[in-house]
Image 1 (cartoon, rainbow, N blue to C red):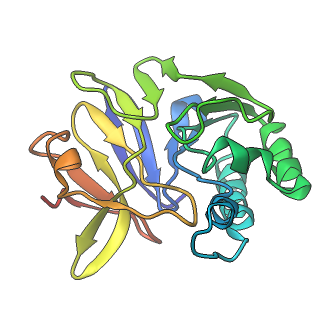
Image 2: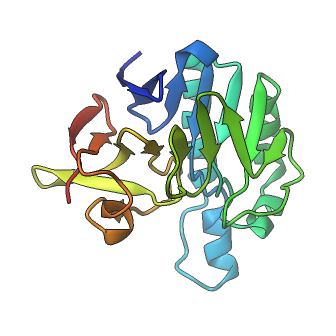
Length: 216
């Protein structure tokens, strides 16, 4: 499995090139900010028309990561759907695919700011999920340790190329957005540069995940 291994609060974790996180000792796969149904939401609100294939592509990558890791638990860290209406509007084939994936393991949905209500899909719904020594939630909280979160869609630049990135310091990990139609926030943005400790690193996603000092 191609990834970048690192410790957080005593847990040994692997950042996968896809943007997913794997915790071998728990056989747990974690992803954040899928934003399924984004093209439907844009069309519904009169925005730019996007090709309606992002949900299939995101779920295909998630299935590939699940097949590779054979994880028995999946945690989705919030904003799994672009909003609650987008979740309800998913085509039956896409709902069936989610149900199929969720039937293979324990599936946990963390509520996000885009999708605070249950999506009427298989799995457990939690505001946050503690699994010692870590806690999984959507948005990072100050003065915590062992926290795994998402929300910010972090990205970082190396040699002129910008890639989604994990951000890691001794207290917390922030996952990149996993969804196909998701933008990103540069790690130099004050929302991230003030949140992460001075010696934080960015783990760039891609075929070979690469750790660099977090660009500020």
